[in-house]
Structures are given as C-alpha cells and as structure tokens.
Image (tube, rainbow, N blue to C red; front, side):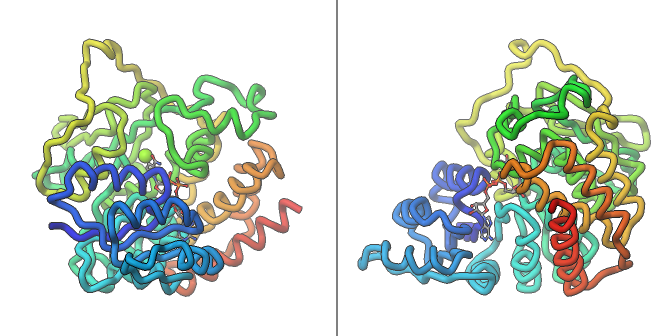
Length: 383
Ligand code: NAD
Ligand code: MG
C-alpha cells in the first residue's frame, strides 16, 4: 500500500488523483487531503476515502468543516499553512501529491522534502519560483520529484533507462490553447469566458488562462529545466494541436523518443504514483487510425509574448522566474475578475521584471520576500 497525502484534493488534478485511487483501492491509501475552502467536497471525500487528516487553509472554512463532520468519523482537522505543512510531512506517508495551485505550494513541498517524502509534482509554480532550491534539497534528502504534468511525465518516460547526459534537446509539445492561429489584433478584447475554453483539457481556472496566454508552456519550459537539468537553449516548444504526443526527447545520436496517449491526466498521475512500475487500468486506448493526422507548428511568440518572457527569465537567472510567476498569479486573478485585459498580463509582467533587483541563489526566505514584493508591485500597477 502506498500512503498518499494530497495538497489540493478538491481541484481538477486532486479529483483525478482520487479517481486513480478509486480504481486501485488495493494499492493506495489516502492519509490526508486538503483544500483552500471547499468544505462540502472535502466532506464527501472524507466519507469516501476515510483519511486520517484534513487540512483547510482558510481558518473559517476549517471551523465550518469541523461542525459538519459526523461524530462517528475520526479525523484531525487542521488549518492554515501549519496544517498544510503537517499533512505534507506526516510520518506515515510515502508520497505527497502536490495538486495545489500557485506558489503557495512551495513551503509545504519543501517541508515534505525535508522529511524525505517523495513528491508527485503537479504544482509547477513551485519549481518555477524555486527550482534550484527545491531540486538541491531533493538531492540532499534523496527524494524523488516525480512529474505529474503530462509533458514532463512524457519526457520522464522517454528518459527511462537513458543517460540524461546524452539529451540533446527536450521538445515540449503545446496544444496552442483556445486562441491558436489568432493574431494579437483579434485577441485584444477577449473575455475570460473565451480564454477559459480549452480545446483538449478540462482544468482549473488559473492553468486554463495560462494555457490561453501560453504562459503555461513558459512555466513548463522552466519546470523542464529544473526537472531534467538541461540548459535553456536545449528546450524547444512545438505546437501540436491534437495533444497526442505529450512531449519528446532528442538524443545526441539524433534519435527522438516520445510518449503518446489520449489526453487524460489520470495517466501521468498514476505513473507518478506507481513509478517505476506500471499498473493496468481502464483508461481509453489510443487509436491512431481514428486520429489519422498529427500536426506541428512553431509557436507564435508575437501573439503570445508570455512564452518568450518565461524563456527570458530563465536566461536572466536569479529570482526573475519567481517574479514572472508571482506577477502572473496576481494578473491572472485580476483578469478573471475583469479588472484587466488579456494583454495587460504580459505588459505588467514585463514592467515588474524590469523593476526587479534579482538575487542569485536565493534562500527560501528571499524567495518569499520576492513574492511579497512582486504582488505589491503588480497591484500598484493595476491600480
Ligand atoms: P484547481 O484550481 O482545479 O485546484 C486547485 C486546488 O488547490 C484546489 O483543491 C484548491 O482548494 C487548492 N488550493 C488553492 N489554494 C489553496 C490554499 N491556499 N491552500 C490549500 N489548498 C489550496 O487547479 P488544477 O487545475 O487542479 O491545478 C493544480 C496544479 O496542477 C496547478 O499548479 C496546475 O498548474 C497543475 N497542473 C494542472 C493540470 C490540469 O489538467 N488541471 C495539468 C498539469 C498541471
Ligand atoms: Mg502540462
């Protein structure tokens, strides 16, 4: 039995993780779940999966959940950042699955690593804002960081049994999002509802907006750099609208290895939880004759400047990627609240990056300080 704790069990990835557990009840046990504030869904999950702990970040919601839990259920209700840290480092867990959205996942993830828990990582923002720190802590503690993001899972699977030193290039595939093929003039006034409509994946709101700006691919370029220890110019992005090839690795002898599958996040989630084994399941099988054509295009960096900004921050190093990420979090929220337009996202990110004094090799405290500074700075730009 693999014992799992989940940061963000009520979101898109969190619920699909519980689907995987449901399909393999004899293999996985859910020890702890958590959310920001969705107590109704947490209560359902508690009844079904009987975890020993639940952490609710929002204090009032935690109090509310306590009053909702039937008296015959024995569970510890925790709250705040302390609650998230506790469920990330419980002695009885083997792996922490980070399905929380945003850099708020950083501190609990580092806590898990310190306690030598393997990480099944969906929360890409953690690596974007603190990749160097997280990977070096993982190495120091002998912890595996197992990618859940479909592209990184594909790269990880393509690298099975290979020597990472023989990687020539990582080829990240991108669906192109809902606005693929459009030009900037056509996108100036797009609404959040148009941006939220992803062609191939149903996901949380933040990552859906990130997919529409291609910031998601930018964050994934940074995530790939840290996961696979390659240089920035070894990472290429190619638009592949069918989302069948989940990503590829090109080796120094020109051979390219790819991983293919139907677009279904449960597969990379399951692989991260069963690695190095594979486990039979009932997921849809790929029928290439039905798909018939796989196409590829270059990304349009003029229409989607966020992807270029992400590359730039990797090249600049220091804390620039952390600023990119935190600024993006604030701006996506503002866009979802109709406070700014679509192209204000890259515009304000650029202005914030220009105003930032970067720190080389930042500590956790410094990264958290950069996050605070960035959020305040961006908010002042919006007003
Ligand atoms: P979501 O918005 O659907 O869910 C987010 C989860 O995080 C919820 O359970 C929410 O309660 C929890 N959460 C948010 N703030 C919290 C806080 N302060 N404290 C505790 N919990 C909090 O998001 P999602 O689409 O599931 O994405 C989660 C992460 O996985 C993101 O980093 C995203 O980039 C990554 N990811 C998602 C997908 C996908 O298909 N959805 C694919 C690849 C990677
Ligand atoms: Mg992805």
